[in-house]
Every structure is written in C-alpha cells, then in structure tokens.
Picture 1 (tube, helix red, strand yellow):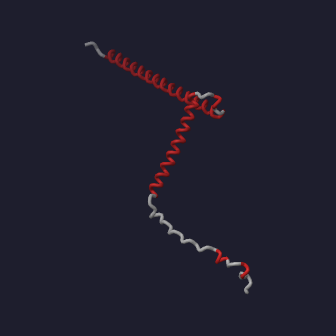
Picture 2 (tube, one colour):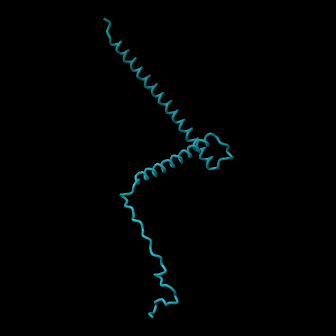
Picture 3 (cartoon, rainbow, N blue to C red):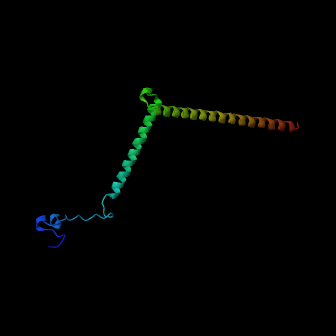
Length: 132
C-alpha cells in the first residue's frame, strides 16, 4: 500500500463518492437572446412609473400640508417645511405683484413722458409757424 492512498476500510474513494456532473445547458449568446429589447424597455417603463409615483406622492404630501391638515398629525419637520414653502410662495407672489405694479408704473411714466414731449413739440411747431 502507498502512503496517502485510501485503505479498503475507508470505504469508496472520494472520486467514487461524487455523483457524475450533470451536463450543463448550452449558454445563450447575448446577441441571440430574444426579447432583450422588450425587457429593457419594460424595465425603463417600470422605473419611470416608480419615479412618477414617488413625485405624485411627494406632491400630494405637500398639497396636504399646504391645505392645512390638523397640525397634530404632522411631524415637526413637515410643519416647518410647510411653513417655509408657504412663505416662499407668498414671497414669490408678492414679488410678482410688485414687479407687475412697477412695470405698469414705468409704462405709465414713459407714456406720460412721450405725451409731454409730443405736446412740447406741437407747441414749438405751432410757435414757429408764421401766420400767413
């Protein structure tokens, strides 16, 4: 007997104990895969739908906060976020209204200046005309 070789008392050899490996199926080639484009577009559509759902949920949350849900139901951070959003909206509306008023005032002033200049020109032209 050789050293390291199994003795008859050890039982069958390790090679004999292993079952024969099952034949593996042939791997599919990536270029031959059918429906890979459909799968990718379905994945893209699913991801887009999830993102849209998240955005809609966030929008609904903000709308609910702005609508004035009972304050006890809102977390402190949500209340603070709602207050800051309301303040920024109020500020934006006020700035927009101020810009509109300022624009109209500027338009009125420039129209008055043009009209005054016209009157002045007309007066000068009438003064320069000789009766004749």
